[in-house]
Image (cartoon, rainbow, N blue to C red; front, side, top):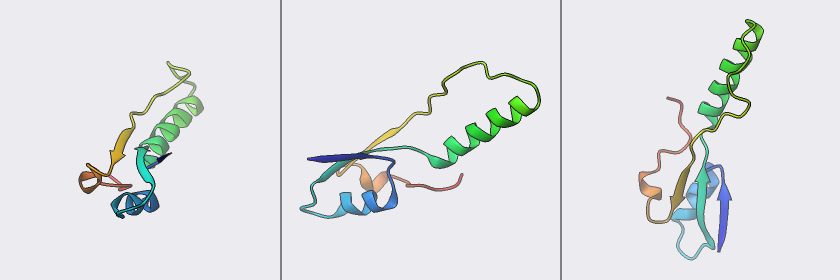
Length: 76
């Protein structure tokens, strides 16, 4: 069994292929990650220190059973 992170388009394709050893991917949202980074950076430039030293962004577990419902990496 192979698992991955990111939920990248190539993993999405692999999960849809029968017989592929890839079983799951923890899907991160690059747009949400970039948005949080820009917000934090802008705040620092404005003199506001972040209230948290670590910002957790929820990930979604993508499997063969739910890959058809996965929206992929899309701008919101």
